[in-house]
Structure formats: C-alpha cells, structure tokens
Image 1 (cartoon, rainbow, N blue to C red):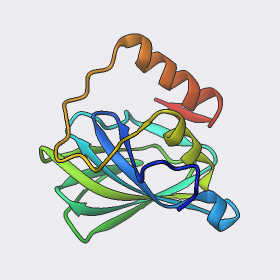
Image 2 (cartoon, one colour):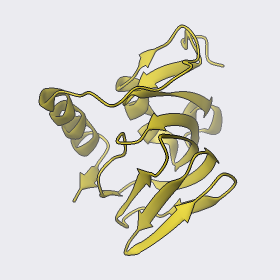
Image 3 (cartoon, helix red, strand yellow):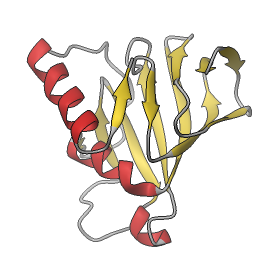
Image 4 (tube, rainbow, N blue to C red):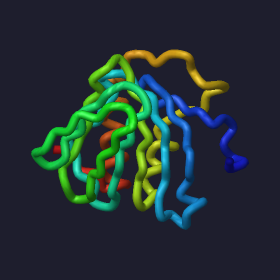
Length: 151
C-alpha cells in the first residue's frame, strides 16, 4: 500500500471503499476499488468519455443498466460497461459490496478527492445525506475534470 494512505478505508457516499490496485501500480492502466455502499448512493445515468468500467458483486445485489439493457447481478457476477455508452447501477439490497475496475485508472483520483480516510473498516453504512451544494460540487468536479457526463 502507498505510504500516503493513512488507512486502507475511506468514507464515500454514506459507505466506504478501499483501493485494491492504484493507477500508480499499473502505469495508469487501471485501478481497482472495493466499495460498500448503501441503497441510494448510486450515480445517475452517465457516460465516461475516458474510461471503461467493470462491476463485480461481492455481497448484496445490484442492477446495472448499459445502454438500454438492464442486468441484475448477484454475488460472483460481473458486468462490463464500455466508455462512451450510457450506464448506471442501482443497489437492490440495503447495501452492496462491489469491486469496481476502472480502465485507465485516472478516475481513481476522483474517489480519493471526494472521500475521507477512516481509522478502521466501518461495521455499518449510513443513508446518504448530502447537501445540494455538495452534490453540485461533486457533479462539477467529475464532469469538468474527469469528463464524465450525466444524462
């Protein structure tokens, strides 16, 4: 683990994540995150102009929409979402733990910027409680810096 990471866990959208592979470890080819998120913490329909993504479910259930196709995923199932194709996911259970593969890994920086270190792995996740100002700041950052377009 990189020395600048004080804790492997970071708070994000009412849940938490840990980085399994940093872009620095792969020459920015990819990044791999393990996220545990509560229902309601999902992003709206969006398009990555620079990254492909894959979602692998470890716990809980999600549905992933890629273009016009909706696929329900249970633990052990994976789905690929290519760049320039609209996609989103919904958490169908109270919470879900997913591995998110991001290729190339640049978008990992967004997750680091929009999260805070945690002293230890949380036992629970909380409902998402973001102010409109915080939501707008997050949307501006991911849209303008990382070129993710929301529909």
